[in-house]
Image 1 (cartoon, rainbow, N blue to C red):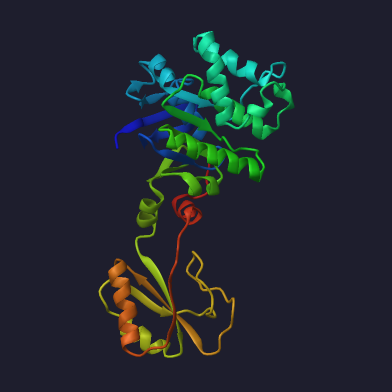
Image 2: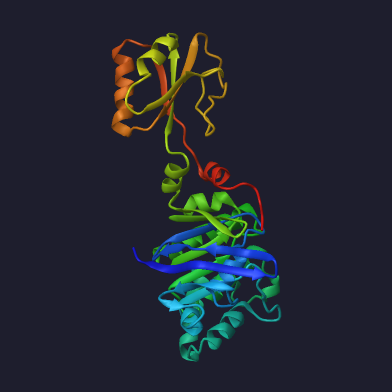
Length: 333
């Protein structure tokens, strides 16, 4: 898929402080791209440069083929931007709020009536249409602001911390709404420091720390890059030394060891098998392995063919939290 958002060597300095440092990223058309990093990592500054609200010190950004520095109006026509802190006019009704912003986009009044109804239905606020904005909960205001960004039907949504400060239910509702917008063909670029939100819905992930992009790609790609080998856990009812000897030296096997931890439970992402149950005589063999699925199956066949008492054969699953901890060092700019 072609890139619909792209930055090259994007940099922003404030005196001696480098908020964004030589950042180059690429967002595929139709992607849900999670821009992940701790507070102070440079996420908001990057998004403000992409949305033409901030001039970069150096480097360039392109959105839907428009340069953010040379064609800012083209960028603004293509995007819907929701900042991390957004203002709402408390003395307006919900429908009036959307009508105001639709008018700012020069949408004709006769068109705005149906548009507002559609937007309210999309964000599940039709039942609050005539309520004052200041009576809405934070989650509802968040959805209303998202509806506002859709008034001119942009092809790209750029959302800065859309789930920030929301309760768990409201976060799930925002997540489901983003998935629905993706199904409608929108490209979604959103920043967050909540890893669970990213792991649930994102097709691409970029991890930023101290203004630098330290990892980018799909979660699977980053898992393979940061953890290049697989870790297998083989629990046997005895004869662990024999299994270790049988596996050592086989193609793709980097290391084989008998785990010190008690066996009897599924492995954690860190590779240890936690003691859910202390099974008498059970031992776990850990294997660092570079082979594919067929080769993994061949290892199991080898052990069973030797008559070894294999009770459990599992593989560590690394989630986004593991990838994030591997990629970052815990520093801010």
